Length: 273
Image (tube, rainbow, N blue to C red; front, side, top):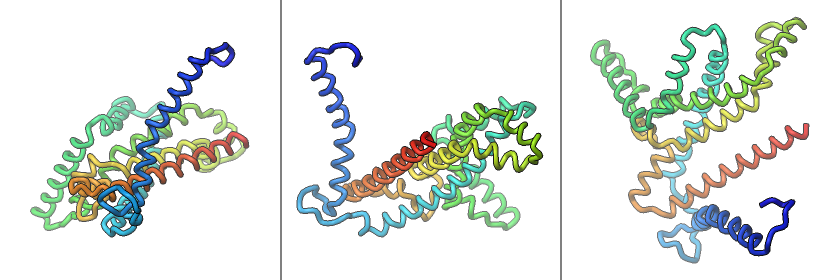
């Protein structure tokens, strides 16, 4: 629609109807899911019988595991991804193109193949050390930390790409000016470069948290006794437990909406400053 040109009533009505139907189709299922999340009944009818998620210790435990897992993965991925972004911006870095292709390989490989490969490799290494040296490496067998390292292997690539995109726009003369004013290397990186990269680092941290929290394909093959939320949800789906699915969906929708609103508010404040 071009506002500067006159439009017929039919065109305006059709355009408005399209917008309404589009957003209705987009948000109606989410709204229904949020409403049904407050019904602790296998049949989605009135009256509501309570918020089912908080009455299920399995879901609460799985939510806690996913939260701890996402925190660990996001911190490791953000640190490694930021360092990798600095590394790939070095002009004299040998075999930079080859190493970059190896870095992005985990996000190209299907998550199922990646999970199976990591499980086979770590299990072989653990069995080798146990059979030959009597050393038990339980942390590289299916467990919380194996899931964390498995997710870290590809999520850190996303962080590196986000930080690298902003680092390419960085004006290097700012660093030269800081050196001329007597700053050392650490001060230049801390007060100049990292301050400039702060939005992308925070964005990479948020992205890695969400990717870890919802990851299923790779996690399915590496999980141990502690089930993250996606795996617990998958197990409940096979049992046909729809109230639990609605409750979990509501929490994820609510958390995502809050993160989006916070990001929008911070972006507006930054533009005003």
